[in-house]
Image 1 (cartoon, helix red, strand yellow):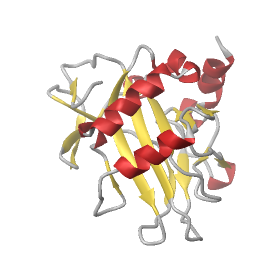
Image 2 (cartoon, rainbow, N blue to C red):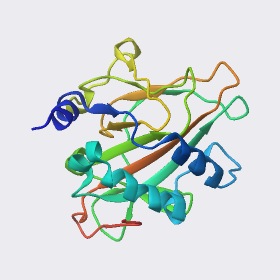
Image 3 (cartoon, rainbow, N blue to C red):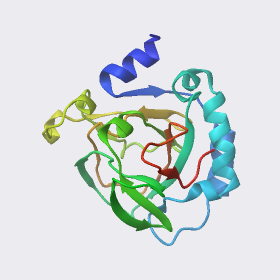
Length: 210
């Protein structure tokens, strides 16, 4: 295995800097839709997100993990003093899919149906968090190696993972992660892409697949 794939497999995450140039980040910031909340889960409906999928998949550091996967979701997280929140340690356990049987429904969110798939499916996913600007705080906190565990970890075990603008944090949705509130006026804007296998079991289909 390569060093990137080895690190991702062992720790459950890896950071790649300089995936997008500063000018590309600024263009994405200008293209972001106006949100009435802290973000949205349906950005694959927008050309700017779909174009970014191609850039991520073509990026040499990321291609090894993403070349055989499709983008199935893009979520925007827009954190500021006006829309500020903290998230406790958790794992991401739902996916935007429908049409099959056997998995528990998690309802409709931003117009998309979500279900809770098997752990095997969750383990096959790769989340790509693209930082569009660099704030001195608000970076994600993760518990390295927790994607291989089923028990919960203590917050003290979490490590803050700084990612500069244009860089990405690739992580397993099963890794325990958290975030804190912003304390300053700096904004934290992130595009969170989810990549998965082209086909799902049990008759399920992705809502989007690019």
